[in-house]
Amino acid sequence: MEGIITLKVSEKLNLINKEIFTACERVGRQADSVKIVAVTKYVSNERTQEAVDAGLIHLGENRPEGFKEKRDAVSGNVKWHFIGSLQSRKVKNVINEIDVLHSLDRMSLAKEIQKRADQKIDCFLQVNVSGEEQKHGLSPENAAQFVEELANYDKINVIGLMTMAPLTEDEEVIRSCFKQLAVLRDSIAAKNLQHAPCTELSMGMSNDFTIAIEEGATYIRIGSSLVGE
Image (cartoon, rainbow, N blue to C red):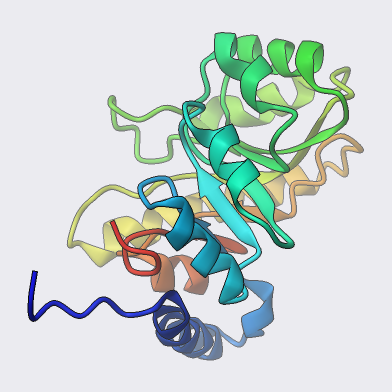
């Protein structure tokens, strides 16, 4: 359509990096402590390649269908993150194609990963901090026990926790959600479990990533405002 100008990914990345720097500055963090996962699930292989060419290393997909084709089509130094809910029956199609899983939330999935993975996989536990029925994830009350139960799963390395804040304009509700995840992360990390260092926080998307950064996010998942719809 005439009159619509689509910014290059590199231009959008510059704008987002400025926001990251400012958010980090507000709370005394270094900007390089935050990694961007570019959510490429809705964009073409060409746009995904543009993201990599702009310097983005971490790419996020959430559907097994079409993922391998995209992975094969994109070249460069890329770490692939699977950020969507993963059905146990589809683990075999995905687990050896990715570097990080953001949605470990049940024992049946852990068992399938243990069975299918060729090597140790970095995983985030998905925690449903907001308690919304439509969202996947462990309850905060059950997360620590779940981590303990993973001790004998040598294909799973719990690097951190992931959550999604409610879709709301109420900043305090969003901030509270992220604060709770950070507290939970710290309590698990304090156990010094070999299989669960739990140092990372995957939280914050296009609409709330600056709040997430202020509350300690180390990975932010950015889609529409970075690569487009």
